[in-house]
Image (cartoon, rainbow, N blue to C red; front, side):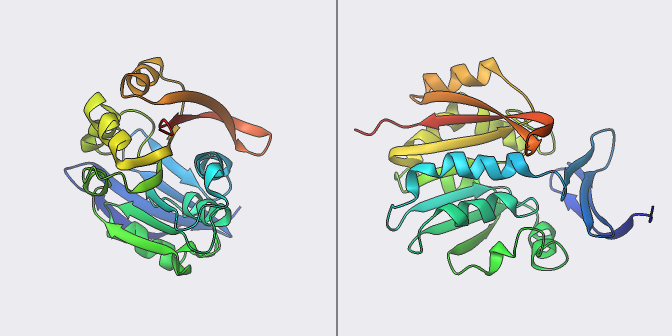
Length: 227
């Protein structure tokens, strides 16, 4: 088996550690320094796709739909959202780390079909919170895959997104009938309670990291009332 080749590194803000991008043949890996290890792999991305397919299912025929994707990752969440959405849609992908976006413009781009080249895509370098705090009900879906689930593992500031304050702010940022979809490595009953307290109608889905096999991940779906 060929060895891994390191293609790049990036520092996570606020002492969150170091990300490493590596390649072995056609396989790519992004890992975090320390015990957490690998965060994502180009061979295991089905749950990231399911995040978008579930979160954007209600927008297949919605003209001028606006979607926020929190977390660039390897581009699979963004690519799946673009597959679902009509030509008039706009998808804003937010990531704190500019190097991750550049990796997706470069060596990672072909993994997900270069979704950053799609004319519907906009990039926000910075915290997704900056987009959500406007509170003017302008998004039809918010898709979050910024950490390991409802806790700030790689970036402590992400805790706000999963707090009652942050969850309520996301609720206000959504249009009537809008959807929040959150990726998680596993279930979290306390987060479900916070979603309900913020006003969401909640559904929890279990999906596999590969179609029909691999680790089980959780997708939290929160739907805002239509009226």
